[in-house]
Image 1: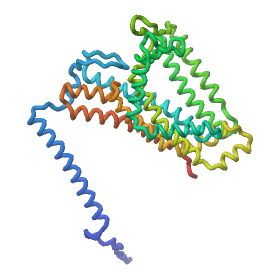
Image 2: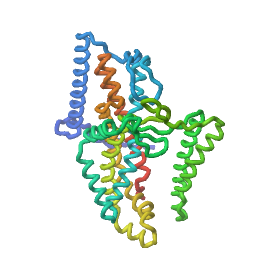
Image 3: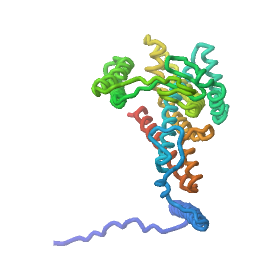
Image 4: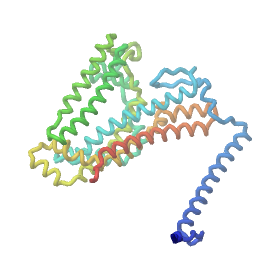
Length: 396
């Protein structure tokens, strides 16, 4: 019996390091660039800490647990000057979020309506929408904030001569007074409203699936209105708690009761919504015009009315073009809210400025502002990118 020995095939020759290798050069360049960035960061941090130590300036975030000692004119949660700096900054952050969330919703509605109006066949509507867009986009936001603040505080009458456009609604230089619901049932009603919103989203998803299979349109608008009205009422009935309508009443030199929208908040919200709405209008207009005109003609040939053509054919396709630039406008609105400090609205920038003036913790205060806006902006981007992927066309 003979055995034959087979030599294994020779592998590739070992790779020699050579500066002529583009992969090696790219790796070296990246390592050098990373080392340079790390050195710059180390130098800045160490130099800053050294200068602070020389001047006996305390560092760290321990000041957040100390008593703030200053009042905040507008708060979303309970706050007194005896609370800590940390709670004061939380109040400022919630004020910023309130303006940003409400502003995004209102600016989207206004921008969508104006963007559609620019494409209207009615000459007057189209021209008015165009004038609004061109004027608002070319006037700086800060000037618009000063304008609205001046209109509210200087040109509005005092509480005794307040305008009353609706029963229980008063407009004066003290702000906008509105009736407010009070009682333990309010929490149950808000919970019912939240359940209604979730149910509407689920129904919309189910209705789209059913329409794809059967071609039948689900009447989502009727169901949405019914759920938004019915579920809060059910929550109120289940709670068995009292619910009263607190209507503002003029007593002395000011109003008592109800809900107040301060002049600062109203001016800031109006400026952000009107300014950002003009940019959103152009985004919506360009997105609609990006849809092929053949889609509109095909839908019209099926006998669909113009409103249904826009809602069922044009807008769903235009959304794939609208969402990415719309995300940028939402981020711009959120970051532009930092201009609130110019008209005295206590957002996070204003509160942190007061804090760092009292404590001297300037670097920590700036880091808190940067971290807050970075977190909010990234959250908006993540949500919008997720929604953009959901509506994107899936290639087969």
